Length: 193
Image (cartoon, rainbow, N blue to C red; front, side):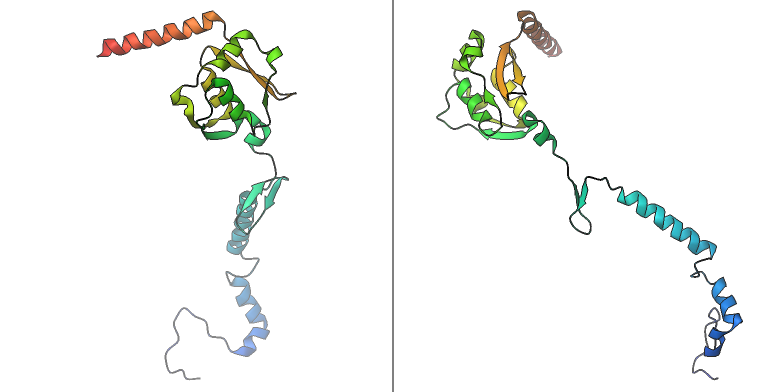
């Protein structure tokens, strides 16, 4: 058979009848694409391992598209309501710290403890005027926003069973230590100048 161009030296030209013979079977077994060839067997194993490693599915994972999945578990903010990230611009009608705390708790699932169960120091805190710097809070967790409003003299008290929030005054020694550390930092900064 004459070809208009010479066949490349690295290709094997076989007539159609050869595909049905033992010789064709021998040639195909030597081929890299035959499933029992060591290279193809290794490639299949590596591909299987990569597929198993990349999938890494949990029982709670749900595939929503070809390349997207999400976990069917609650987010941190859903599990811990006070860890919700908030960014709040308080309206001008809010004038006291107590009103600001109530405003922050509106859609959080928590509420402020009753006046009867709140200490006199906390009631005095709630009656204080809201500082202008606290009119815009966030982005921060709801817990951090509430603690920012109360200041360092009070700590947040949470009742997760009844979903109640109140504040309790810190021990005076803790506040004094905090102020002493702040004064020491200020003195060190002055010495650096």
